[in-house]
Amino acid sequence: MALFDFFKNWRSTSKIKGLEAQLQGRPTPQVYLELAEAYEEADNPQRAAQILKLGVARFPSSPEIGRRKAEVEKVERESEKRRLKEKIQTHPNPILYARLAELYKADSEIDQCIQICQAGIKAFPRYGGTYLVLGQIYIEKQKWEEAQQNLEKSVELDKYNYMALKLLAQVYMQLGRPADSARRLEDILYFAPGDEAILELLRKARETAGEVAATADTQDFKENQRGKGVPTPATSNSRTKIVGRLADQQARSTAGARDRVLNDGIQNLRQVAGVTGALLVDQYGLVVAADLDSTLDEGLAGALITNVYRTSSDNSIQLGVGTFEEGMIEGEMGNIHIVQFGDMILAVFAKHDVKMGLLEKAIRDFASQVAQSQNS
Amino acid sequence: MQSVLAKLNKVSGVRGCMIVNKDGIVAASDFGVDVDENSIGAVASSILAALEAAIKRIQVGRLKKFMVTGNENKLAIVDAGPALLLVLLQREANMGILNVEIQEAAAAVVEKAKM
Image (cartoon, rainbow over all chains, first blue to last red):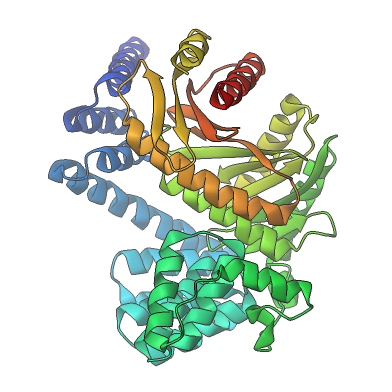
């Protein structure tokens, strides 16, 4: 039996190696399908799903890859739903509710999605991610008033949330409030300057609002306002300054253990010589743990890092690197290392002379701490 | 420019490289693998433009390089004065040696652009 397993594994590994090599040379839809199947046979469904995602990105018009990808993702979602439900029972935290709701939304199980969001909001009313998912659901149902209420709450809790601000701007347009829409889009440009999609939406909102087409650079205008001590749009409307962190008092009371693990991990990273700060952001762009230089606004840093991550990961296939794993920004005064951990993003700020080996080890240790805290 | 790229391509771990202007238009390219050069150039320049504006607010100074690592390859997008140097690398490439070579190539691009 052992010999049979050995040969089976050897054949499977050889097949995967051969197909991986073909992908590096001249990929075809068939190669992606065969490779995904080989990974499934080798009991590695995650890699199979990843291969199919890459295949869809390379060959978007191939119906067979699209169909297989949808099947694999559906199986993955069901398994993840079960895991999240169990975790909510044993170690509840607000991100679990938001993630579970998103999975129901992906399967068009709208009633369950709303139910989970409402339960999440009841348990953790100061976490913006759940309001965001609920806002998205109401947009799909074209219930604009309800969408507005939830997205406004999400933005109130996290003024730098790209997705919440963008959706809220779109909802305001639907509600015939283009001037409010333009203000929300201007807020986004503060931490995502030059974002072409936002600039285009802003142009339309201003046109609709009948405002004079702005030829002046919005960012320069906002910088000048700041220089004069004039509050940014985000604060001028008396919006809350609360950043949507898990460190929020109420979240802390029930999700304290996880929060402590993450905060301890972040602080351990700062012990590495040359590291000047670190922060962890969830998939909704909310900072869940941070230890940064006091001159940096962690909410803003989180939004900027999320924006860099989103831009890079959305375009990683076109850049020829495959699925995004990590990025490093090298500036004149230091580096920022951006690493994806499942559904979270870690950013580590470091000096040029940081020992990369030590930093990589510390990041690996932190990754295993995060994984343990997610699975515990 | 082509000679700078040819020299860089000889370094172990380099799969290909190109020079684009800041608008993403390809000025020179040398790839040994099948890639869409125009797409890479356009996407890289737009990412870098967004990054340059963003990092002004997080105190790391002027942007010198952005390295993206994926599950297949790495891509270094390097500021080279009026242009960008893009280097596609094997995922497991030894960056210790490559960083030096890439910086030298970027400096050579800056010099040649002055001529």
